[in-house]
Length: 281
Image 1: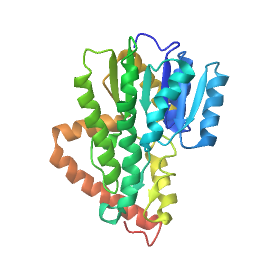
Image 2: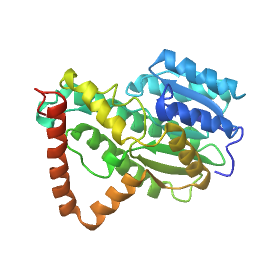
Image 3: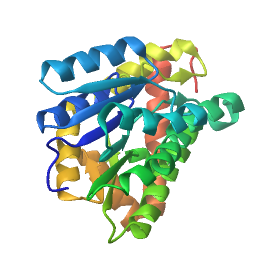
């Protein structure tokens, strides 16, 4: 997009983490914000920060997995701001545990947010985005949308699906007024691990400590990179050196990479077992 100044940007999952940082980064570029989330307190805090930066902002208490609520969101944004130029499908949740131990209801919950939230956003906002001279969609996938990781099967399934959806849309929307960027963050310091559904709650402190150990990028840095990608029309954005490393490893040596993952998984399980006796997987 040539400019974000006075453009209306919708951000889902805007109450914290990358979503909040994106709202502020877009505000700093002159955008008008429509923020959506299920967390009313965090949503208000994000909106206050956007307004403190001098930009108009509306809030929308919406569960992206709720189709009827999402059907109403585009009209609510247009009623508040007159247009929609940018859509950032950022809302996401996590679910930890081996696949054979995951309740199907928990998998439904995760796919509702991580996959259907993106499908709803793209499908329901696209007619409004097509009305503008230029518009852009950002879909947040993950490094786990590039490589399958153990005890994250449902999360990986959702993020691989977001990647596939986005790549299909890139072809279908080529040459149109709507650009698209799929983002693959690596370790970004957000609360997603702390808010994950866990098979065993005893794991939470250990798992969040492990996540904090490997998460190096700040949400603000991730947001700055994403906003730059919107401006440049970048179709694919990888965030963090680990994302580049794993991407190329899977391309060049897929079988060897899977073998390395098996060894790494065993070492992590051993470390977790030492840190929290009685937790084995």
